Amino acid sequence: MTHGIGGSTAEAELAALKPWPNPAPAITPAERAERLAHAQALMADLGADAMIVGAGPSLRYFAGVGWNATERLVAMILPRTGAPVMVCPRFELGSLQASLGITAEIVLWEEHESPYALAATVLGDPKAASLAIDPALPFFAYDGLRLAAPQVAMMNAAPIVDGCRMIKSPAELALMRQAKAMTLEVHRRAARILAPGITTTAVRRFIDQAHRALGADDGSSFCAVQFGLASAYPHGLPGEQALAQGDLVLIDTGCKVQGYNSDITRTYVFGTPSADQRRVWDVEKQAQAAAFAAVKPGVACEEIDAVARRVLEAAGFGPDYALPGLPHRTGHGIGLSIHEAPYLVRGDATPLQPGMCFSNEPMIVVPDAFGVRLEDHFHVTETGAAWFTEPQPSLDEPFRPQN
Image 1 (cartoon, one colour):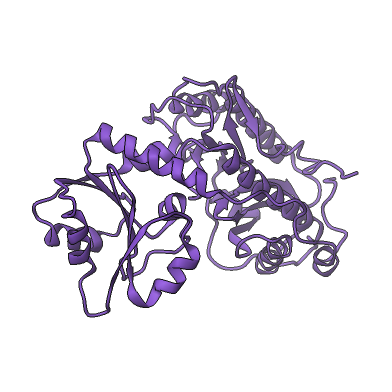
Image 2 (cartoon, one colour):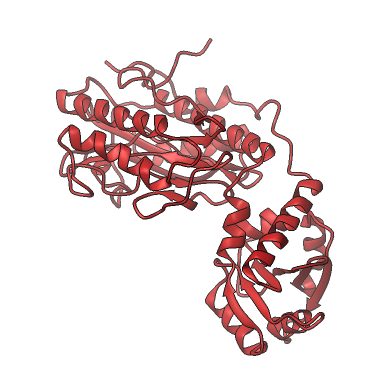
């Protein structure tokens, strides 16, 4: 019988939650200044005279502005030398000033004016012959820039953006550690509210409320709750399920702390595990552990994926993406985006470096039956890898008893 599952209620668990003690400090202006200087050095290597970064995770990274992209251009133009310039609708000026985490000139456009013409003016003073484009910039914004500044050569800013963001600082690691610890606590409490007949909707609602109670930015950043057969689909099935004895439970959820993401999956059984469930869970645990043990600076990202697959294939799963087996990559980078470069997948030869952060989730799918995914995150150290949170101890004990 699985321990730590059931026996409580959503009301009791929520009542016991308080805002997270000792929250991690915010990113400082000095660190953001270092990020801009690093970006400018990478721009020089790429041969870019300027770079434009639109609203989204990268703008938060460089400028502290945590806005999502809309049809209105809000962006930072960073020259290879000198101070950044923010392009913003005039009516958003007050909000931008309240959000901005760097020192920058601000240029404004009215609703009837072209922000791209304004950006072209910025690029012309001093004259820029080449512009690196944020890879997440919407196409319509790229097209507007292209038409407004036809004399400027456009290039992909991914080597600059990824070159900065994929190596996390100690301050970033602390924010991510908090987010992941919060989500693991939510997982622990979600397991306690399970009972026959509870719906996936009720569990998702509890998880969102619990993340909010702990002080996450906006509750759950995402939440997947899958019972029984639905767990055989990596991202679940549409509709609602009700929990029954013997169901495999797969919960994948996360939150944000100052924009930095958690993303943790736990898989266990409501009731007594079957022999098949136990066998697959044990192989999944072995594959996750082998991937973690293979992490060393200089090892190619794709090798971690290959290590996990070798464990699965030795146990009769696969090969490659064949089912029953692992239908997707072993892991993804994580930070201000829940999925970001680099990736633990065949074809990504990026060498591992200290400060890189990844998920480790070599899921096993058994078609028409169930799936098992154990997902935890690690960061690369000078000698190997370090977990942000402790992996699931066992199928029978999903969570360590608390003191």
